[in-house]
Length: 529
Image 1 (tube, rainbow, N blue to C red):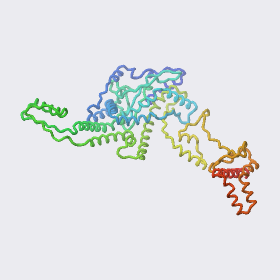
Image 2 (cartoon, one colour):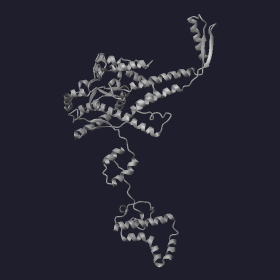
Image 3 (cartoon, rainbow, N blue to C red):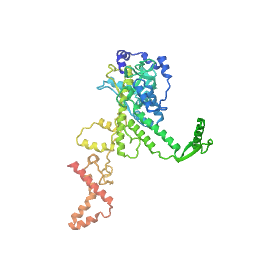
Image 4 (tube, rainbow, N blue to C red):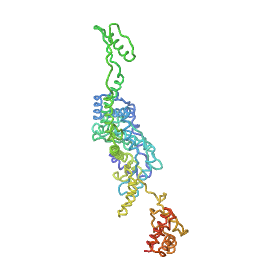
């Protein structure tokens, strides 16, 4: 489609720069509505449900048809498989919804001008207004299984001076074929040998590469069809085993010369006795009961488990993220979960490129004020970053900053997935350190509990001015009694009296008194050094 856009470059530039312009003729109505004959052909097609009676030989034939350009039998087989196999549908749903749940944004081109930045913001608003956009993302991921997915715009209209698609519809893969001379070019089936070229501004055409190769060989269908077949064989055999398990083997004996009608009558009697515990047989014939059917279900279950584990590996890149099995560990599960993130990121990058080409580019060409070159345009991107451990950063960043490292706040916000607040937003603020009550101007002689382990920066906690009188009033009640005893007695006597001086204080009061003395001493020293 990008090639078609480039071929129409001059016309599109003129339309984008005109104050008023009409919708291009190719975008007024869906392409599948403009050609009546082709529309009838593709819309009347009904699925052949190739999974019915599927054998390895038939599956190989379907895959070969796809390689030759006939895609719809392979896509119909994929549709049947997803409907019939609950495990396949579940694992594929995980992978598809992992992409649908990602946040996204529109990125302007490198070294963007103000006009280009404004156009990126405009495109973001436009996409956010599309109520169908989430479904569009999900339907595009249908390509993971089938190799490709197509969605058609239902038309374009002018809304408030902007050219916008009216909606989008998913188109079944049976509507398409490969060009006979270019196996990577998808075309509409219209009954002709080459098919009909997809019109520009009409389609979101997504391909999902699970492996390298032509368009017909890149989908997971070609890998998953084999475990699907073998699993269904095992389930069928298990059902038959359960039906006859514990029942005796019945053998009917007919005399020589018995007619075909007599043989059929005996066979019917044998089957009837097996199910109804009763029946009749012709005279001269015998019914012999052998030992009951023996064995176990383990071989069948083992085959089913192998098939499902193989599907999980192909779809999610691992097994421990979907089922633990007989062994496993949290560590291994985390490793497999990381692998699943790699698969998700790959899907997202492929889809972002498609949306840039088939959705962002047409919108930008038709509405962008800065459009001048198809090679310089905004890009659609999914947000693939994972939030870092907040605790780790909170404990380590202050240390790194104190070491002199210059760390950008924008980088920290990005790592922790915390949006940068605007000027109008209410923001969290660090709590102001509280000034101890005994230093308060309103209560200079008051006492407040201050644990010895409490850390308060004296320079921040101190009042605007602290005088020698403040110091004296605070420290005198603590030290003056001790000084008086020392001055009036000898050392031995003073020691005994000091030990009994505060005997009436409990441990908390004593700690509080000592903490106040230490705090004020440090504060006085730092302010007057």
